[in-house]
Length: 287
Image 1 (cartoon, rainbow, N blue to C red):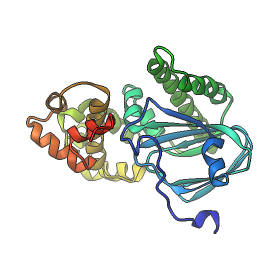
Image 2 (spheres, helix red, strand yellow; image 1 turned 120 degrees about the vertical axis):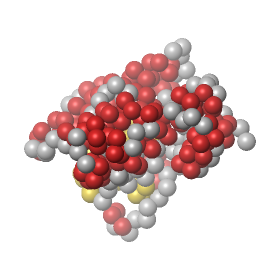
Image 3 (cartoon, rainbow, N blue to C red; image 1 turned 90 degrees about the vertical axis):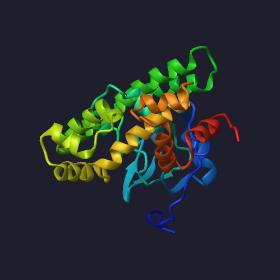
Image 4 (cartoon, helix red, strand yellow; image 1 turned 180 degrees about the horizontal axis):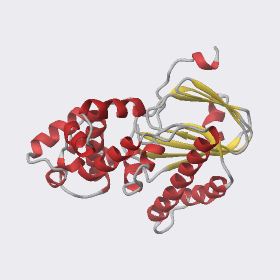
């Protein structure tokens, strides 16, 4: 069956079967693809962001229906939710780093529009900086040393920064237009005010545009209306607090601007499919 026509698969990866992962997951390209004849069929990860770096070999990447060639020093950024597939030449060497959306939010909390930059999938060429970073990241991931999580977070932040630079280089080389300034300003306001439960109209008012115009710009750039992004940011913060803190659910609810913890539970359950308490229990393998 042709590469572009294979059936969309749902790939089980860390963080999808156990809700939230380690700081990251790092594996070699060969570790998974060699088990599938060096071909990974079209699939998507709803809450996981991936960065792939090829040291040698090559193949093809298919991202959102576009097929792109891969070779030595190829750098691939796969945004959460984007359909992607890979066909590697046998023996291809490289690394795959996977991060949960919640960890992305934690690392990029003060990174401004970089969250939007990294939210676009692309295939580009590494200038050597990511290739140099991958071996120590791989070593730290596999070695259970003191302060492992702290070191991994630092390495992840560096990785994301280098990938964002690669995105900028690619955009300049292709003469691509800059992302809309309005979108960057909306993202910055969202980080400041999502706990205040601002509506689309509130953001539009602060940006001096109409709600319709704001939603049109956001949808054109992300594929989602502004209202979906607003709720998604709130839910990601809730998930992060449930996963990475010991705060009680009631405390989390109040911290996220809910006056009624029961309302928070209903909103979270609708979005995540399980209640906050069930979600937290699942992280430790509880029933």
